[in-house]
Image 1 (tube, one colour):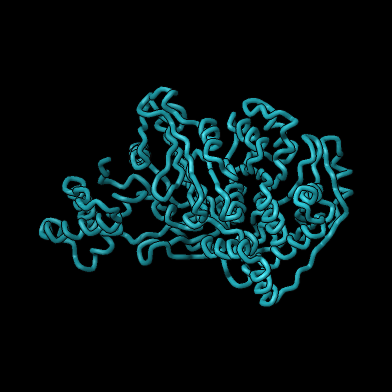
Image 2: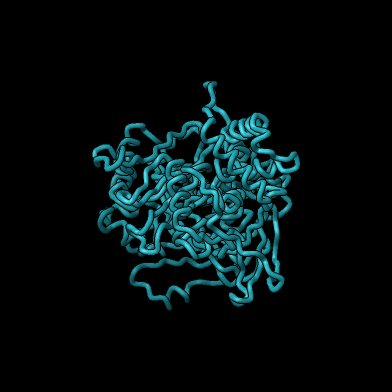
Length: 538
């Protein structure tokens, strides 16, 4: 895609009337972000991008350099994997030297010009800063003459100061990003869904074919380093005791389904819990877009494939349904499906019935709605199979009663429920939105009692084991063990020598465990909201 010489977009400046809340660098000294409250929006926050400005001669030199690179840049000749960014920037410097008289780039301008070469040739153009910002989860554009919006981890949805003014420039950006993802987009095929740099998910519509206001796009950013289970505990998304409970379930091949709305943190929680699976177990993951990132060596990753070519036949596509069936031939201990929403759910539950462990996520507001979705077309899971998914964890992005790390928003596992039947569930953990605390009814767990009969261990032995694992998890949090690989080493060491690992953790842990127990609570479709509320103790 040839770069347009003009700049058909605008960055709204910060005016003195705005109250600056926070400023941080993205690529010092070339790009930074400012969060500011805007009086015209009633004091609501905005996301302001500030980039090093190019003088007119620098802009012309940058455009010429990009044209030269587009014409003369050749792919690397060496066979091993090459850092594309370093390769292009090295070639850009060579071209600056080769065409020094034509480009006439001053020494003090070179770094700035190279930043814009990377931004416009390799990167994301005007949205480059947003995508590089590690605190941004989503970037979305609803068309021209409308602010590009971002979803910020600390401030949630914010309008940015970037606005596209020319539809051609927006169309060109979408074509460029689609090609980066290896996909075609045109008026004949105006919808594209693909992965771009860093496994970011890029979804776009082209021109006015399906979106009357013109081209639109959304980039859902992929976290290169997924949050570990200890980071989830530190952020209070989950407690060490809940994590220890899941750890014991996963060791015994129990199945877990994580439910919640869009952006609730389902995949993040799924990835964190999957890291607790015994390293000796074989795991098969199935996804539409590769988002899971496990540290297990015995891990087979499957990703669905769309039809080949423009207007490819359906026979060339490989859907989740086919991949879940394929995993059964790999004899996995655990089958992990990124998200179930079609007939693959039926195959997954068939696998659970044959003794495999399973984990998945599902878009659902609560347990009852999750069951209704599972038992309805196109999933069509028989009601008698629903208890095979032993535990349901409901995660949600919530408003906190008091700021945590400066933010009033966070993600919390609102409920953990054991599935007794397709109509009856028992809450074993519950989040209180008033105190931002978790309550436990683990002493009434039906699942642990079933596990006791199956393993030959007493119920109290299982509770004691959860206590020990809770101490190990709290110890990791206190010691700052947050990297996924480091957490995996501790988990592996615990499986090898549990007593030794527990003794180290218990001796070094400074904070004693306090367990809050409540009376048992069972909910069903016939339980009224008043009855549910009367059983919840704060």
